[in-house]
Image 1 (cartoon, rainbow, N blue to C red):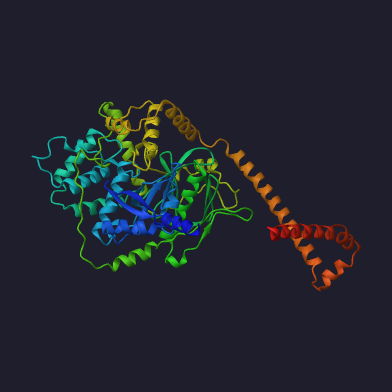
Image 2: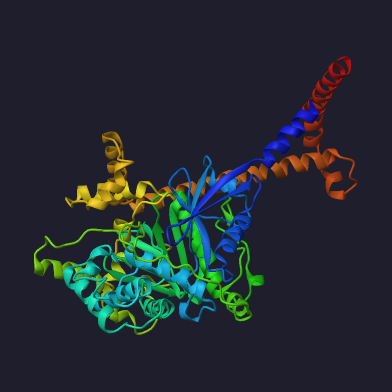
Length: 565
C-alpha cells in the first residue's frame, strides 16, 4: 500500500502540463512543464527561445479563473499560481519599461520593446498629439513594409492598417505623406530606434492603467511608470509622484493607499484581488526603479498591528543592476525575424478597426485631434511636482474634492476626451471577457461595432443572460463604490472590534500562563506570595484539583482503550 502511494505521488509530480505563451508579435510558443516547475524555469525557456539576454524588463502575464490579471511570480510554482485547468495560456509582455529604451544594449531587446509600445499605441494606453501620432505610425510603416513603392503602395494604402483605436482619413493621409517623403532609406532597426526615442518623450509612456475610483466615486486610472506614480482622471493627470517621494504602499480589501511625504492618496479598486494586484505592481515597480541594489529589497507587508495582511517581496534585479549587466554583453547580435505588416494578419497594428468616415468632418476632427493633442504641456519635465490633494496634518483620507478646486490650474491636461484605454482592448486567449465588455459598453452608449470586432466575437458571442449579467457588472462598476464615508465608518468599527478581540485573547492567554506558573513548582517569591493567599487555596482545591483529576481520568481511559486494541 505504501509503495502504491509513493508511486502515485511520484506520477503526480512527474505529470507534464502544456503551456502556450502568446508573444508580442502574436505568435505562440508552446512547451511542457512539470507540476513543480517554477515560473523562472518557464521564463528562461521563453527567453532562450527568443535569444533574449536583457530579460529583466519582461514578464509573463496571465488571467486567473476569476478574470483577474496577474504577473507570473518566478519563485513560485506555475501550476499553483494559475489555478486553472490545463492547457495553460499566458502572454509575454514588457513588465518594466526602460527609462531610455534607445539605450538598450541589444537590437533584439529594442525590437521587443518596440512591439510592446506599438500595442500600447493601438490599445489607447499611449496618447499623443496628431503630429506625433502620424510620425509614430509612419515609423511603424517604414519598419515593417520598408520604403514607399508606388507599384506596391497605391493611393490610400495607409488606411488598410490600424495604428490607433480610432483615426481619421486626414491622419491617414498625413501618415502616408511622412512615410513617402521623410523616412525613405531608413532600415527597420533605425525606424524602430526613432520610434522608441519619440515614444519615450510622451507623458503616458510606460503606463499600464489600473481602473479605480477616488474617494468621491469618480473614475480614475492608476499607473506606475519608470519615473513615478501617475493618476489619470477624466482628461487630466491629477497626480504625479516621483519614486523617491513615495514612502509606503498599502492596501486593505478594495482600498489602496499611497503614502507620500505630505499626502496620503486613497483609491478603491473594483475587487480585493484587483487591489492586491495593484499593490504588488506598485511594490515591484518602486523596487525596480528606485533602489540601487537588489540586496536592498525588503519584504513588504500590507498588515497593521491588529490583523494579518499580505506579504510580498520583489525577487528580481533592479534597473541599475540591469543596465550594468547589459553593458557587459559581448556577443554577435542575434538574428531578428521581424513580422511584416500583412493586412490579413491579426496583429493589433494592422487589424481593421473603426473609422470615422461617416462622422461629419468638423466633429471627426474634434474627436480625433482631441484624443491625440494636449500633451505638450506635460513635457516640461518628466519629474514634475505632484498635485497636492491634502496636507500632512489633515485626516487619513485626502480631501480630494476640496483641494481639486484650488489646484485646477496646476492639473496637467492630457486630452479633451477622457482617458479610457479599456474601450479599445481586443480579445486575447487569456482575456476573453474583454471583448464582451467592450461590445456591451458600446451598445449601452449607442455606438456601433466594427465588422472585424463582430467577426472576432462570433465564436464566443454571449447569450442574452450573459449579456444581462455583464451589463449589470459593467453598470455596477460604472456607478462607483457608493458612499465612501459609510465604508470608512464600517472599517473603523471593524478595527475597534478586532482590537477588542485581540485584547481579550491576550488577557486570556496571560491568565492561563499565570495559573500554570503558579501551580508549578517554581520557587519564586512572587509565586510563593500568591500561593499563600486564601483566594488561591480556595481556587486550588475547589477548581484546579478537580479539573486536573478529570483530565487525568480521561487520559487514563483513552490510554487503556488504546492498549486493549
